[in-house]
Structure formats: structure tokens, C-alpha cells
Image (cartoon, rainbow, N blue to C red; front, top):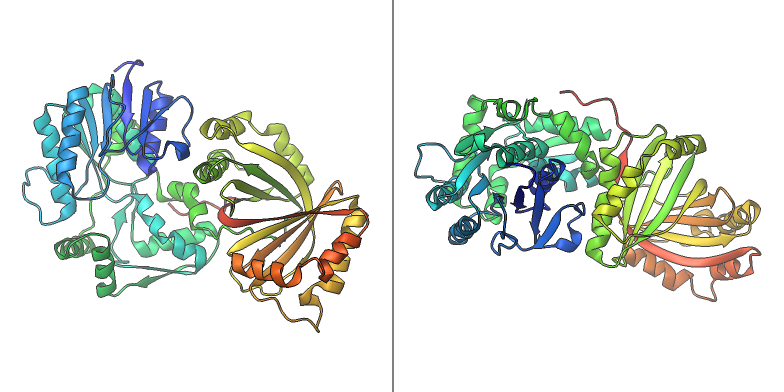
Length: 514
């Protein structure tokens, strides 16, 4: 195929489909990205985004090939209908199948093998030129652990001693791009594995190394593991098949194949490579405000017009940091989502102003352009440079569920610091032995702008209800704190905004073992 090729990518905003769409676009291929949510697609403007799904195929007019992945399991009638629709519009399909399918096997006692085999057969019978990709386990499957690692130190799962290879979604996508653009792969089955054989126990240990926090594995009883599978739509027969497969791999680990290297010309990525890209998803998203090396904080807010675009902008910001070389002196970058569904808070910690200035001199303009290209129309509401002045932490063990940013304009450093000192020393309940503690309040971190023009209280609470209780009981017009704000010369209250911690990137640690 030449550079005038047009390819329709289904599932184009998922882990694999996104990488396929981006990889094709980098090759100069015209890409149509099929997604149920164009508003939150976060794809470059060079890619045409089409609303639809595999069950509601659109954008097929004039395409030369289709990258097809089928969501979920079952519903084979709809899959066959999709195959026929594709065959009526184009002559080429690359199908993301499964390693559960085996050549020469016609009958399967598990849903994954049975459904993917049926779709492969329908494609063969449709007259389409085809390539089938049969990957083993995806590394992104481990993201189901993220909620456990963000909020605790235990990862619960089954078969923790069984070694498996985990395929990086970028490797799979690069193979798909080759198959979509090179006719040599027509009529071929490409079986794909990752590079490393690792047990889940070893995987958890490496995640712990990368995020700098101890984690340990806890084996689930089989009844709990089985109940989880059944709750996900699998059958008892599927559970038996999974258990037998894991027992077989325990006795004889599966092969590590060289398909990725043969197709792309380079070895598959390591598990450490994958972790470097996904560490933020396993990390507690709340910033470590009292980081001992933090000498400067950059704080900014963005405003979007919808909640989908709000999240897309946050994801674009994280991707821009994650894909670029990590700047010297940057300790962490966090994004938080406003509870209003429109705002994004960016909070980055640096060692000091020198590091920030060096970064500004070298920051590639492509980083910002990539964000704006993926999510046009971001309104940037200003960037402030702050130093943390004073903190009060009434409940260090309380997990942060919501962050409240309380902002003030000030007439210089002296007025700003004087206000903070008076507030904390004379009015804060945590510093007054005669005051009742504030339930659900974890901390208050007062930041003073380097130029003295503002003060920000970065306050952490258990949830929105805890903060609202403070508003209703302690921040009425007749209460002491509002009166102090009103009476302080050179100070003007600007109100507050609530945010939910979303993602945090931290400075890379020494490479995880490969």
C-alpha cells in the first residue's frame, strides 16, 4: 500500500486502537478513527474521528483496509454482520484475535477461543484479504490492579506463581501497522508474546520498585477468583479452562516468540519499558505536598466546556509529560479534575526556580502543540509560581479524596505571610487546644506566590461532604475566618474550587530490572 492508503481503525481510543491509529498516521496513512466518544478521543487533528462502534460501523466509504477488534465476548451474530459490512466496502482486514485460537482446532470449550475462532472463520469465508493477530496476555491487563496499588499496599489475585509473558500494546500496534501497510502479511497468522516471562508476584515486585512503595501479593482463594470471573460474564466452563491453562503454564511456561522482532525489526519492549509509561496509573494521584526537595510549585488551571473534554485534556497533559524526556529538577507533575466537570488543576513540584528556568529554555514547543492538537480549545487561566510557606496537618493518615484550592489576592509577600500566620496561629482548630477538631480534614498547605501577588491554600479533605461541613459550620459571614479575611489590609478572597486527584507522574527512579 502507498501513502494514499486510508485505514479505518475500530476501538481507536482504546489501549491498542489508539496506538494503531497514531502509528498509521506517523506513516502518512490517512486514518479514520472509529469511537463512541469523539468528544473525548484525544487524537491529533490529522486523524479523522468518526462516531460509531464495531456494532454500528461507519466511515467505511473509500477505505482500503480495516483494523478490527471485537469488544467483549459473545454476540457472534453482530460480529458476522460486521464482517459482511466490511467486506462490502473494502478488501482488507487485520483482526485482533486471541492466542486461545489454535490452527486446526474447530471446537473450543471456552468462550474466548470459541468466539475469536468464529470471527476468524467468518472473515475467511467473507472473501476478505486478512491477517490475524493472536496475542497472549496484554501488559495492560495489569491495570486492573491500579485501584489496589493507589490506595493500599496489597495486590490480590490468583496463580501468583505462574510465569507469563506480557505484550506491550505499542508492540502489538506496530505489528498491526506493518500488517495493514504491507501485503506480505496477507493470509498470515501472527502469534505474539511479550519479551519477559514473569510471575504475577514478580510483576508486583517490579511495580513496587518503580513507584517507590512496598507492595505485596496476596493469593485469592479459588472460590473468590472464580466468582470474579463469573461476575465478568464468563462461564463455569471458562473458569475451568483458565485454571487448567494456568496449571499447564506452571508446569511448562509458554514460549517467548520472536514475531515482534521479525515483523518490526526490533525486539519487543521489556516489562520495565511498559512500566515506565504506566507508572502514574499505579501511583497515588495526590501530590506529596511536603516533599523535602520541593523548592517551587507551578500551579495552573485549565477550563474546558464538557466533562469528557476535561478528562481528555488531563490525559493529554499526562501523555505529553510521559512521552518527553524528564526535565532535570522536576520532582512530580499532578493533574486533578475539578468537581465542576470543566476545570483541570496542574500542580508540578520543582527543586527550585533555576530548574524551572532551565526547563523553559529547553521545553520543546511540540509538547504544548501536541496537547492543543489532541484537545483543541483549552482555556488556560494563568500560571503561578509558588513556594510552600506553612502547613498544618491535623490527620496525616487520612486518605485525600478531594482537594480544595482556596485563593486570595495579596499586596505583597509581607501581607501574604502575615495573613497566613494570623490564620494558623490564632484561628486554625489544629493549633488551638480549645477548638474542636475538624472531621475529615487532612491538611492545609499555604503557598505564597513568588511575586507576592497571591496566596493559595491547598487543603486536603476526606471527601466533598467533609469540606462542605466546614463551609457551613465555620465559614459563614459572621464567623471568625471570614471576618479576618475582610479585615486584613491588602487581601482579597477569590473563593475556592474543589478537585479530585487524578494522576501523578514522578521523577524516574533507577530502571526496573529487565
